[in-house]
Length: 98
Image (cartoon, rainbow, N blue to C red; front, side, top):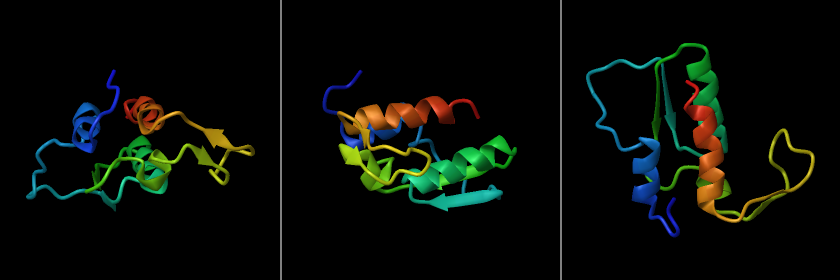
């Protein structure tokens, strides 16, 4: 586990830094890996689509760096995380299923 990972370390751990085959046609390309982008990627992959997510910042977007989120879809109460890493690990466990 990382204590203070860089964005690059988080992306590498999640497999986000793989070389992109620019000749391959994808079913779905998602720009930005915030909560909605990651959710779209999971749903697309769960339907068997070939999904590519592009992100230049940190995975999770602004929500990944927030310690408190009051309006996260599907959660009637406030979500609190202690770190961006904790938030990203939650996504990783879901994404790995597909």
